[in-house]
Length: 324
Image (cartoon, rainbow, N blue to C red; front, side, top):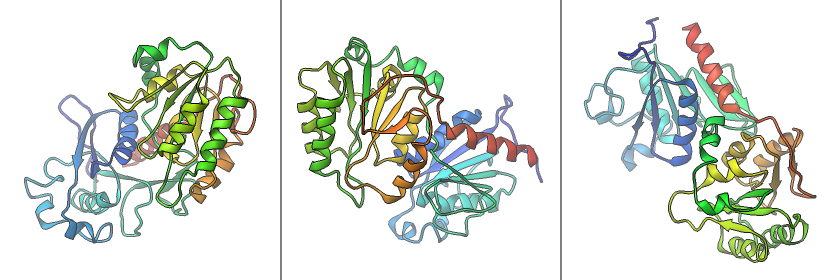
């Protein structure tokens, strides 16, 4: 087997393959940044005709590695990390063209034909195998350094809120379930009636957050020091996590859960009336960890060991690289 190639300054060359979807790309970046090296994002953009056959079918003829316009063209990397249905076929093609490249796919590729060296899946997915790694949380870009930097950035209003403070990370509707109005009222009652009055609150919604949830939260926080991101400018998501003494997160997103659990403060999970059943299996395991609880009682502050699957994935890749 050929040795892993390096760039002129000795860095490993890493390609990230995605169709540009932010969630998939951020997971790939999180792992690549832990590995370190010359990271290059290669976007795949097959036409609708070719995309319909993915992840099982081939890539377009025009995207074969020998074509200069192909996202796979050029000196092949040491490591390729991909995520997203459309990227499966490209990673498969890359591995065939460059067997010495270590290939990694994040999340279930939904096909058994992918010849990747490593496939990572969340604990709640069924896929298992000799090249499959499953963890409770997923890859992310939250590190001690990122949080340290975030403590001094973001809107000044966040830095002037009285402590202790809690960050409220809101999700919302999913593909199959809606964040119902009854759940919104339940969360609002917690904020107004149960959350100790000396806590200030920082709130960041997502694109999935329904209007009724935001209205209920706004009403519940009246009379309490708080700050709500209005969607303008960059989301101070990392700053909110860095400044928080505790975090409340809704249960509808594995990515959000993974992000907040990478911090070192207590995490409280609010479960709406309906959210993906598979996430319930993961949360049942997460709440066995110290300072990770469902939001069903008084909120406390303290120190917690971060749960960080990103470093576990990066370590496995380092191990595989040593074996090549």
